[in-house]
Image (cartoon, rainbow, N blue to C red; front, side, top):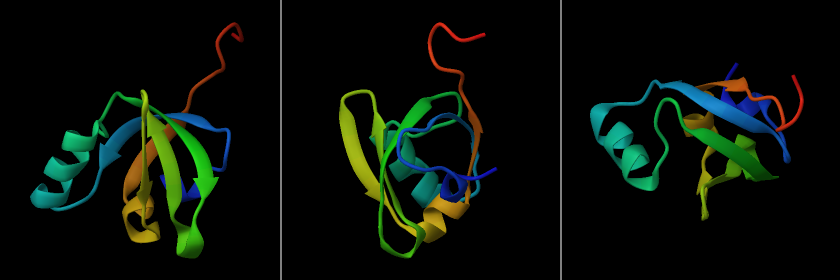
Length: 79
């Protein structure tokens, strides 16, 4: 699934980012890279999402969200 499929409150692990090298580099600078757990905090217009990576929050547009492959992470204490 991709980040567009996620809603507020979801915690997901990034599996891959299907963007060009320049955009992948920018995502890494923001902390968004494969293996990182991302928390979706808000839906934005046109498919975008506001996400939290650690203490940082930033918005991603819908096109970018559609190219970020993720998997759900079980909440802490839930097997």
